[in-house]
Length: 197
Image (tube, rainbow, N blue to C red; front, side, top):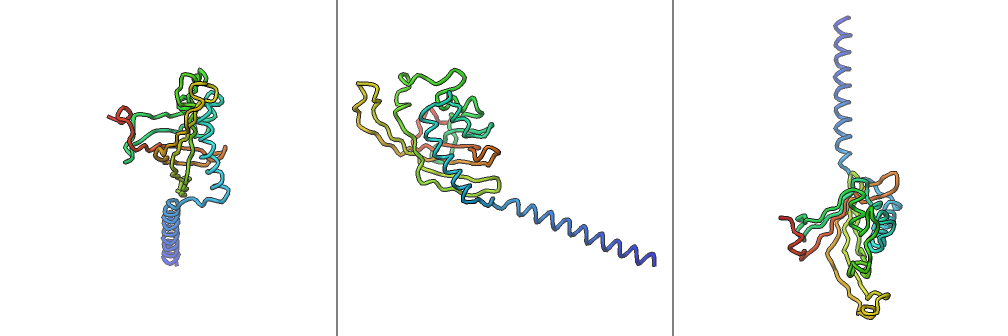
């Protein structure tokens, strides 16, 4: 009787061990599945992308409104049309505020910034793709500029419009809503001075 009990206990332990391994493998396999995004998630990501244009064009709150569209360790960078990173990279809240023309010293003077405050950034044709950690996005970057209405010399300049490459984004959902983990401006014809060496 003792041997039968021991055999039953051994068999039960084997079945339990196999069940644990099966459950762990199933959990590992399911963790590679894309997150299920709700309609609300798609709307919030679209709002994030649309908010980017307003924030980058206006340097509000010393650029920190722009920086707060990112995670605390978020990154903005540039790359050529083949995805090769360029020399421009802003990482973290203070550096991202600087990317917006702001930072700890406030926003740069629009009079010294050339087209900086007469150009409008627009993202077009956004495609959002769920990932296991959140989502990715890709959209075209269009810019439109008009003469500065406060400057008599440039007020009547004709409008300029450019298709200026595209954005490759990584989005994550945080307690404060969806944020950019990274945004890379892929820039066909990127100037040589900005290319990595």
